[in-house]
Image 1 (cartoon, one colour):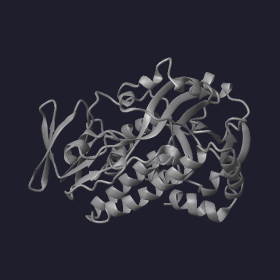
Image 2 (image 1 turned 180 degrees about the vertical axis):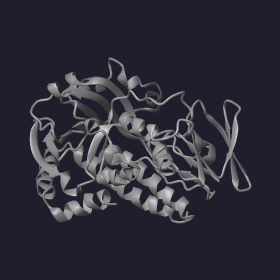
Image 3 (image 1 turned 120 degrees about the vertical axis):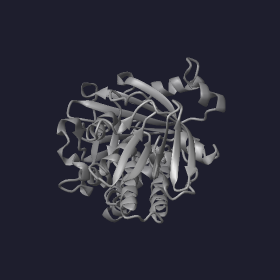
Length: 378
């Protein structure tokens, strides 16, 4: 029996473990540094049909319909004028069993966790060393426990400690010049938008998105603001003090007075792809490569990558895993950068041209199939 160790109980690690559930040829253990998983966090994620198809392989089609939502369109608005520009029918990419889905991240984590045996996740295991002995990998944790495994899967997020250990701290994420604002809005506080759709507001140097997360009237709010921060501000969050210009900026955002449970954080992304030198050591999710958030593919790519690795291990063919994953993520990264550039335009002439082309391109089936279909349909 092969032993597979997973560092981090996030979406990619939990989904990967679910794929191996019941397979007698593998023993799966997830090592999580915290003493529990936060199942109360209320922020949302978007899952396009490429990831829903893969989640259905572990029974997601039976997931409680009240705890998720299937928006039909993305409505584009001018944030300053609160005027609708156009809409994009994302339901065109749906199938009967696979539909564009929004839900709370914590709800998906709970679903993935509950599908696993309770003994699979080991809490309070903070990795401190990773050593190699012949074909095995030895893990040493801060509680002086050591374990050996045949495969190691690192999936502990963009600030991955395990990745730092194997790269000697040479591969680090970088600040991409944006601040993300997350929050929750209740359905009763929203007016002037279609509550069955994703609402995307485009403003000067920012954009924000509002979408339903379930059938109970809870909506996710996320804004991405172009904002330069100094190194010290990144460490101390001094950009949130009362005298900071960002507070005035945030006060002008659509629905700002209705947002609850607000959290702010600088947006960090990956610059380079790192391929481990061992063929039994793998990186997944943001630990492998974190893309900019403006294409809403973070969670979907975590699921995709986990499934691709699952197939590679099952078929004993690892040589193409990283090349295929890098090729895929480059597409996502480039589309994310294009989106953020277009969403944050400040020149009136450029905004006029952008809005004109949005109206045309969102109805052009050939363009949509190339820009979205190649991603959504795998």
